[in-house]
Image (cartoon, rainbow, N blue to C red; front, top):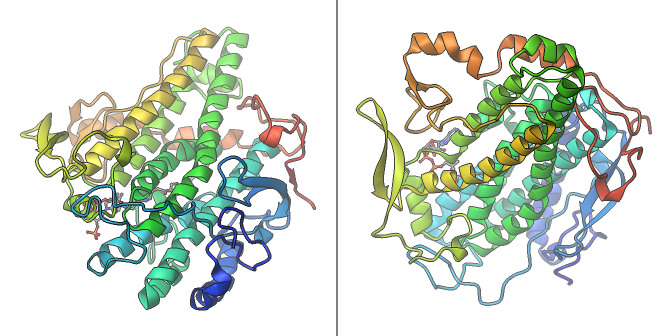
Amino acid sequence: MDLINVDYREKIPNNVNLTEDRRVLKALEGWHPGYLDWWKDMGPDGFQEALVYLRTAVSVDPKGWAKFDYVRMPEYRWGILLAPQEEGRKVPFGKHLGEPAWQEVPGEYRAMLRRLVVIQGDTEPASVEQQRHLGKTAPSLYDMRNLFQVNVEEGRHLWAMVYILHKYFGRDGREEADELLRRRSGSDDAPRMLGAFNEATPDWLSFFMFTFFTDRDGKMQLESLAQSGFDPLSRTCRFMLTEEAHHMFVGETGIGRTIQRTCEAMVAAGVEDPADIARVRSLGVIDLPTIQKKLNLHYSLSLDLFGSEVSTNAANAFNAGIKGRFRETSIDDDHRLESSTYPVLKYVDGEIKLVDEPALTALNMRLRDDYTRDCAKGIERFNKIVERSGVKFRLALPHVAFHRQIGEFKDVEATPAGVLLDAAAWAKQRDNYLPSAADGDFIASLMKPVSEPGKFASWISPPKVGIDNRPGDFEYVMIAA
Ligand code: BYC
């Protein structure tokens, strides 16, 4: 069995030797029809028959792992791909530091591991559900194709977690895998597990913000799970990260192209004041203050995904060797954190203060700080686009106390600058900080589909290069195939 290239003769393409693993193969074959039903019900609405120019993973070799071709999405080959096993890999942190990495689930950590795998798995179909209506308002065939690429790969990431559940968790794993197909984003009875995955993605700017901010949380969480002493989880997450990079590319270039178009239109029309929203909007582009509000919303929702700043769950998972830090193996310390501290931003006696906490319980805060640094670099790239155009405006990440539902700041209100507000002042100011209903209506009015190859909606610039180096007028989606 070739563990680098994937066996595509099988119904479920894989590099985990499924043909030899009858029990798991049978369990996955049993789960497959329910998955397809879910995809048809909850996947991209109205485009199930379209031919989409998609990449499919055919190998886990970093040098050439994907091939591109036209595919109908329900026929996409969702496979199970793990990064190759590293000979002699050791648990890289926690109290088992230096012991051989586990190839089976350690009994004492079973419940903890299953919970993390289920939470990770739950986010993947949730995002497909959130984005299912967007195809109908795609600003171009290029963007439509990118949306569908992200969607099929989130579907594959669900497969990745379901494989782990079926292979390593027996009967309760099978039940959890079924539950992953039962919960629905935004449902009252059976919502998805984490807050941001129950929010609507009403328009394409939200989609780009989601892929910039929320997929970036995905990257941070996957990086931490890729460090796991439970080797199959580590290998699964390592390969998922390869695909995740494209999702963040879609977000970053999507926001960047939106900003670019706004600035170009402002310069061409001689509009100098970015706050002159009515004039900017009359040009058929999204004004920069509204882009800032969308950014405020999606960043704050994504910060909630890191859990509480001080968390015994996080400490236990680290101690156990189950979930590490971002790029754990490149950090120069004892990888046990028994006696070190980490500064945590807290709400103390009516003020926001940095307080030293045991580093072990502060792991969510640390990962969130790594995330914030990564986001901030992206924001600077956006500011360069604005600067180059000559428009005077700067985008910025809001303060971490702004608009939070989880953790230290969940019971207070703060401005994007981090100034605390009482409830009445917040209610008055809210629409200056977060998208208002009127902002939503304006953005919705721009969401007119454009389906002629090479053409783009008024509010977004074309990309610099095509996917798979295809020319500008390439037909990325054959809608009426
Ligand atoms: N919403 O100790 P605490 C991705 C719960 S995104 C609702 O503060 P902990 C993707 C928590 O479950 C990455 N509930 O937090 C992106 C716990 O409840 P129980 C997904 C929340 O456990 C785009 C209680 O509050 N992967 O891949 O240290 C597209 C106290 O928890 C929330 C992961 O997240 C919330 N936001 O950390 C597609 C990795 N936050 O159990 C995909 C796996 C906390 O006491 N998950 N709670 O009833 C984890 O590592 C951790 O569970 C969390 C929370 C980081 C989520």
